[in-house]
Image (cartoon, rainbow, N blue to C red):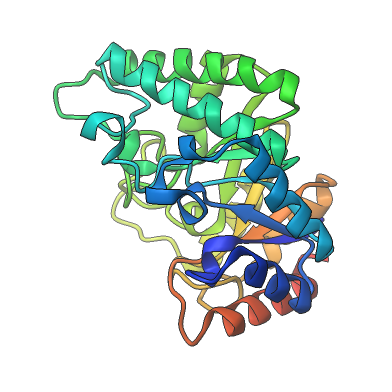
Length: 299
């Protein structure tokens, strides 16, 4: 396994300083959120030459750019104020979303990235009058076209189930695996995230194995994460390490031992990326503690 960190961890620092810090701490890769590098959060304003500049900067510091995540975050003001959306019944909105995804793929390719993590929970959620089956087929059609575009670029779209606390569409690995069967393309696979997996045993998660009126223990939650990795090993393209407290791995209640053991058991050779959503006590300290924990538990 290789260890990376998501670049928004370092917030508003110039990209060169993000690279300096990540490399100095011992990370091997950076995972890029497009909104952190694009003027007005609009990735269409970045061309391949800028991607190549970012790649050269990262490589100078001994880092790989492993790919992109938060693909549609902070884009609600784009596309004439309509933003982008995966499941909308508006054909023109989905077409614009596909076009934007293709541009992101071109940018990712210029940076020699290999994965695009499709989280973006707000840009997938269903309205009350949208039928789930129809929405799933709309999403699958869009993702299939995106995967076809990504294939010759050597990029895999990694679909993330963010959990029921963030969206009402694809809230579990099970639901996401069903969608991936609809997509039926080798360049559209599964992404797993510790924070999100911590909700898999909640009663609110469709298909949860938890019996009614019984709350799972933390040990059961931790163990189940390992079971999810084993069950979906044939589709697993990428992995995020964090905690439901929004900090890094080892900084909260989740014991990563079971899920790390499962990744070793399936001989996972991909990246484990640190993704956090809180930045206290400091980005550097979070990054340092997270990598220390990864080296201790995931190796």
